[in-house]
Image 1 (cartoon, rainbow, N blue to C red):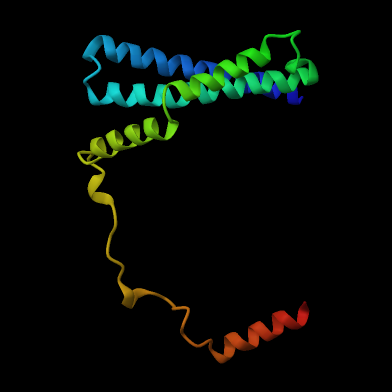
Image 2 (tube, rainbow, N blue to C red):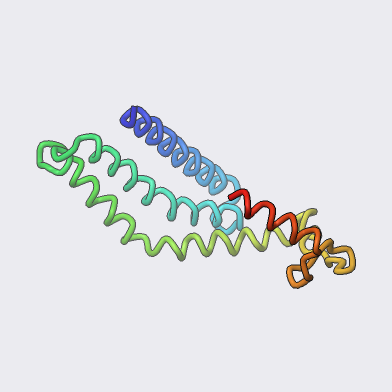
Length: 148
């Protein structure tokens, strides 16, 4: 069952990567790479795909056991290549930071942007943690403790 779950996870991961790349390529064709949404998707592609590739290969190695690390399969070489891919394109954190900054800029103009924090009416607060416990409440606590 674990192997079947790993196969399903790999299929979902691969399809997610394909859709992300397809959407980024589509936006590049339509708008060019200077567009904010395109740059955001490109950053997500650069951060997400190498990590996902390494995870998929790792699951394959795990499914093959010790043979997955031998020269009988191409898995170890693929794993090393995936790790190199993560290093070659720069740190994931930089790509994720770029995607997040673009997202925050886009959300400034969202119709939901004004729904952020709201003032709390402190007079309407039912009970504060520093308020003393009533006698009735103390009796209920003693009753509960005696049952334990």
